[in-house]
Length: 118
Image (cartoon, rainbow, N blue to C red; front, side):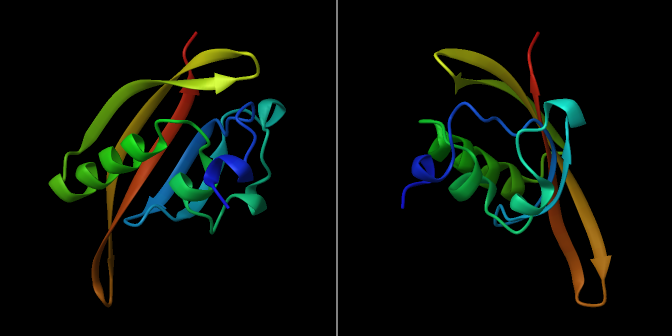
């Protein structure tokens, strides 16, 4: 099943995501509870790019994420047009690195924030 078949393009999961280095969602905080289109339990444990984001440019976004994780930039900010009902909406995306120390060494995570541009 294609990613676009799993998620309605009109449902944008605004908020903050914590992703592991493969793009799996380990934590989700909605932008505003009254605007939440997606329940937390339906988001955590899914792949952000393959299961959640249904836009034509998802492969570019996924590639940009993997490059960001590999190069170790601390923060990256950009805007993407998302399909939203019968129009397009500009979404600001901010990616930031997090490093977690554990018994098994250091693990890289990313914070991704999706907010609508006003």
